[in-house]
Image (tube, rainbow, N blue to C red; front, side, top):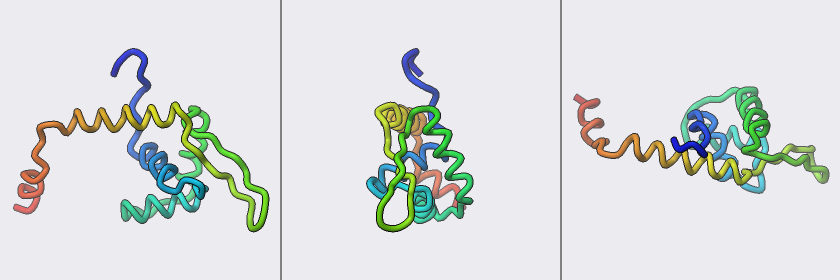
Length: 112
């Protein structure tokens, strides 16, 4: 990690930020939860999603706005520049960590 970089994101923080990107324009808590569950197959408590969204907003990695219009009021989230940087740094760290590891060999080993 370089002196100017931030600590890497935790796995769930990374998943939440990526889900915000994937649901752009419709990135509210329940939709973010659905996206993570759809992609990971993991059941999530909505409280864990909201707690993480609040933490990421406090870290200034996300911003939110409240919708007012047809239908229920929702808090929509968007990735900030610092959030994009944190995701890029985390992805690069994961790539460095996995570099040289033969995933196919791991799968074969796990199947043995």
